[in-house]
Length: 267
Image 1 (cartoon, rainbow, N blue to C red):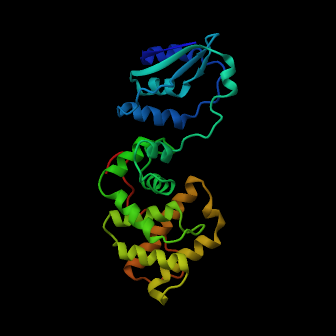
Image 2: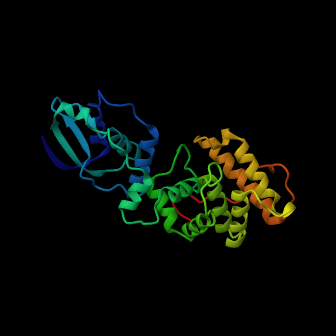
Image 3: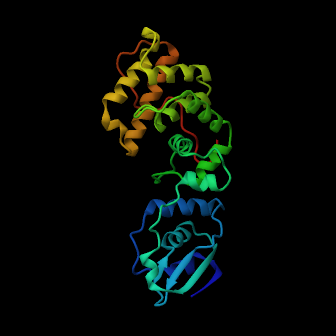
């Protein structure tokens, strides 16, 4: 087995992919994320890249190669040849690094699981993409003061409660702060009532209404994208009613966002 650094063009990537005859199913979302990083010049040379077995079969790297073809970029990659077929028994079996793992290991101490989940909820998806990449999360966190808003909102949620202190709720409040629609004290009051269930009559009715809806609707606590988006819009609608002093006995109409998400990759 031997490894060397190679310049992989779209043409060479296509040639390598002709040997992709025994691999796991392609995940288009992964290819799109890699391609986006390549087009942005943020796909770095890594120690582990493309792997071919002794019989020439491609064993690892199909998503990276497909991304090179998709992005029509040329990348530097480490390419390993004549690997033992038994590597299939051991590769990709351990815990996959999440976005917050990668960011934390790169020196961004703010990148805990909850903060990254809020950032992902608050960034506008690119057309055809199901999620945002690690570099897109970082770009948004480092531009403007949105990260500061997220950290302020997190501080307002003094305790964690299932279904209430979740990423879509925190993202909705963070966007309101970022868009200068709410102050830190207003977010803190809303969060306090939402978590405790105790308010001062009509003035806090929107927070109570949101709390009751979230706790009585288990379908909204699912991990699907549509459920999370519904909770995001619903929280914005209730928080807007709270800010404007509207008495709220049922969840307001929430077909559209009130405070826009962050443009993908920059603020």
